[in-house]
Image (cartoon, rainbow, N blue to C red; front, side, top):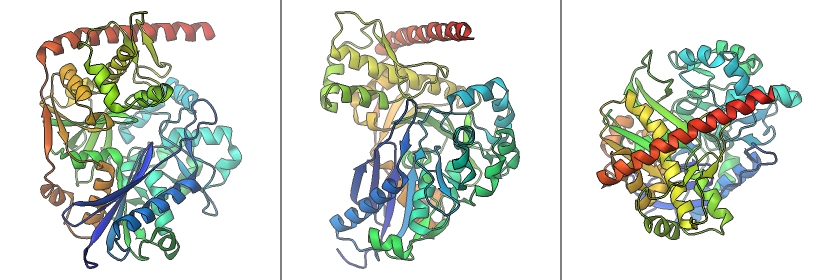
Amino acid sequence: MSEKARFWLGIDCGGTYLKAGLYDAQGREHGINRQSLQTLSPLPGYAERDMDQLWQQCAATIAGLLQRTGIHGEQIKGVGISAQGKGLFLLDKQDRPLGHAMLSSDRRALAIVQRWQQDGIPEKLYPVTRQTLWTGHPASLLRWVKENEPQRYAQIGCVMMGHDYLRWCLTGVKGCEESNISESNLYNMTSGQYDPRLTQWLGIGEIDSALPPVVGSAEKGGEITPQAAAITGLAAGTPVVGGLFDVVSTALCAGIEDEFTLNAVMGTWAVTSGITHGLRDHEAHPYVYGRYVNDGQYIVHEASPTSSGNLEWFTAQWGELSFDEINQAVASLPKAGSDLFFLPFLYGSNAGLEMTCGFYGMQALHTRAHLLQAIYEGVVFSHMTHLNRMRERFTRVQALRVTGGPAHSDVWMQMLADVSGLRVELPQVEETGCFGAALAARVGTGVYCDFNDACRHLQHPVRTLLPDMAAHARYQHKYHHYQNLIEALQGYHARIKEHAL
């Protein structure tokens, strides 16, 4: 390979893996390297990550990729990072990691969020932030630190999220990237700035001075430092752009650009997104908005951590069944043929904060295949909660583009098409996080004049699955029963709450 050839590096820091990929100016992939990431859970509801270890793993993943591909650091013209949204990565006043990072799936702030809900805080915030309140938001976690670890709170020097922290490790420059920070409950969606009213309402006004500048997705956020260069193999001075919230990265790669197609991400989180121009008032639901990469555009979503993470947990308990074995087991059963239900709420819920995970309807006749089928159905039914709400906002939707682990299973995707009655389109992009991050780096270093220009040049092949309408009718019947079960359990939790008071 010519040493004159130019490449762009995309890093993707997800819930389970950290990946790095190299791409040329045309977007062709020249190698991927990945490491699994450890999520620490020292107490129930905690989801943490060791920040020093994360940076070491990131540096080792980049160095391993360069080594494997034989590409020199000098050939890399720009770096972008895509990462899980939300969560909280803190530096102290001496710029050292302040304890472990907290991830978006962390639930320790549950009691605080419930208290805020009772006090009407979400209704106060929403017109300004266009966010619902979630336990894994930086705002909720900051308030938890203030109430439970006041000494740590007093030491906060800088508030960041995942890709902001890694960008800082690479460049020594602090910043919060816009597509991610816009969904933090610390940002005014209309003005495009932090809003001190928000931190006042949330009782965390002390952190205003620790919020770093907002950086655009393709804006240069710093350059590789000599120290980072020495351990990664990258060249000092290489520009690093703001990067992307991974949901935005996926929407970019999926080619979502109009209101006829929605994007569904199935990973740790169930996310359904659409792209729109401008903000709307008085909508049917409090839709979550975020800044999109194109001027004047917003990404609108509905989301909860109720997706394929449930399957991963269960298969780990059974001794790591292969994905092929699972798909064969599910495919061997009639569609919607069992009375078994699964509620996919191991990591959180979209049916009330108190809701937890479980199977219902289990009898001695049920086998492991039935349990796996119920998990597939439960995850799809949970996605339907979000999809149905989004279809009230995007009324002309004809297709659903899907990315994430489950998109590799035709059995699961056909179930999604059958349940939703929509055409399911599967973009053939393996690593949407790495690709999107490298795309941001290509825009930021002038290969494309903006993201619109970049997307015009992207032609990913798409596979399509059509719904089986006979199965659709059977699934609708079962989905209706799932909703009834959810409703009954909500009543159960309400009664428990009454008795506890």
